[in-house]
Image (cartoon, rainbow, N blue to C red; front, side):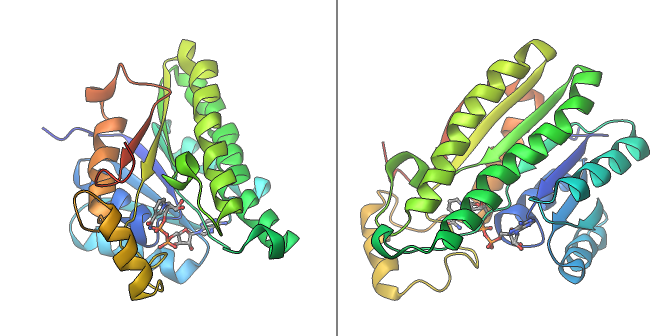
Length: 247
Ligand SMILES: NC(=O)c1ccc[n+]([C@@H]2O[C@H](COP(=O)([O-])OP(=O)(O)OC[C@H]3O[C@@H](n4cnc5c(N)ncnc54)[C@H](O)[C@@H]3O)[C@@H](O)[C@H]2O)c1
């Protein structure tokens, strides 16, 4: 039996990378995956890829920092399906630089997309989940939010913030049967990491006990478990998928 039969799952930033793998994984396990990403063409392509495999997906072009857009899309989804069971806050960006030289814009945009976007989507979905007294929210953080990284102060602050936000929302929503957890991926092969120099990749892999970068599917596998009823007694946690990078 499919773990997620008849569930509706919204995944932000899911036209590619980790988000797309999550959308694909949830759809192949019975859910209707709702793809949200910036570019309409990329969204359509992602929906098509899932559809071509015989699974269910729909898509919307939207920016997670746009409260009006997110409010109206979530309302439309709720009205169509009479439920929104799962929200995965995955959309994220990096704008790396040393603190001494970091532009205010690079600080603001990373905090806005990664942290404020997570807040906006959570706030806009929680009233529907509360109405149903059921729901699961999963936030994609990062090991950088746990350990920090030179040159990524904005990103580390946004991901550390997501981990704290996860705990607070888990406490606020538990009485309504809404679970909130976070995943902290390590070094995962996606477009976000593909432009790193071979030297940086070699240094990272040397520090990873399992001696390899992770795949988007490694993250999606944990995601499937955490959003399913198999994880019904787990909330407020941040779980690493990092090949043992930090322990
Ligand atoms: N790749 C890694 O090594 C790694 C490690 C730890 C955490 N993460 C986190 O995982 C998540 C996904 O990363 P990825 O590697 O797949 O990145 P990616 O760059 O390949 O994909 C991110 C997606 O988010 C979308 N997006 C960006 N800003 C958005 C916005 N404002 N509104 C809606 N969509 C937006 C992008 O268009 C893109 O499709 C991010 O939150 C990232 O921080 C990635």
